[in-house]
Length: 317
Image 1 (cartoon, rainbow, N blue to C red):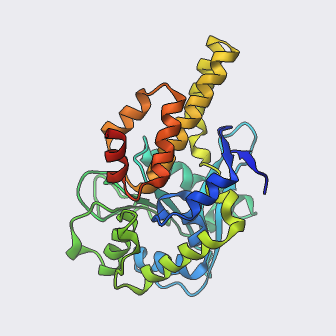
Image 2 (cartoon, one colour):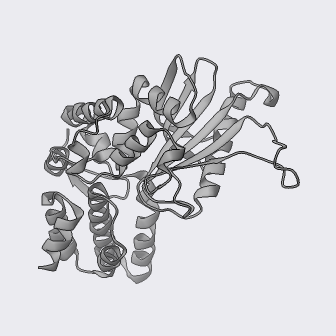
């Protein structure tokens, strides 16, 4: 591996930094890269889908971080986990560690891209198989304190009439409170997703979570995963675009400085997402900082902190 390379936003990432972060005892399912790696194990993915959907799956094939681009002029999509079972039913599972805008429209677009994938393989639309899109959210996407929100197309005039278009969109929330209405195993899994760094390593008294914990440790121990795991998410490239735009307007030298500062800010925020949900006051404070040196110092504190609380305490001293 090279001594240094750049993430999708152009920020410099060193091998030493990758190894330091990989060795930290965090609960990394919040990151798309780790979630995709863990769910690339067909058994991990199969049992998760059975738990969420309440169905039985005999066999499943998994593609992690599947890219779907059908025309250079069209917006493509990169799915965290894409799978098909023995009946050709298609599944897309996405990890959402932080709240993002228009999540409903995002789910609609993802499902439409899955349909295009199947139609391009030579199928007629009448042959479209069942499809499920699942978002695992470390927040409550609808504010109703439910662990699971399931959406199907129904008639407004008579809710007993379903469109029967063979698709479902499901949002899971780690912030649910209706334990008695969902399977205990699903609640335990969501508690694991929600857990902070220290709590994620405890015994959840659940065989599936224990297997996920083991899978996480194997991925972290695999040096071949370093580059993929720490190449900061492609989803952050939109954030860097703003810094580049300002840079062009102000001038090349100042623009480079702003781009570097934005890269340092994005790196810090990504590291903090590993620790858990970033409190809004802390996010605003980071956003307001314009000195790259300060952001770099805070990033060092982040990788040395075992929890979000410890990080906040250290930067407040």
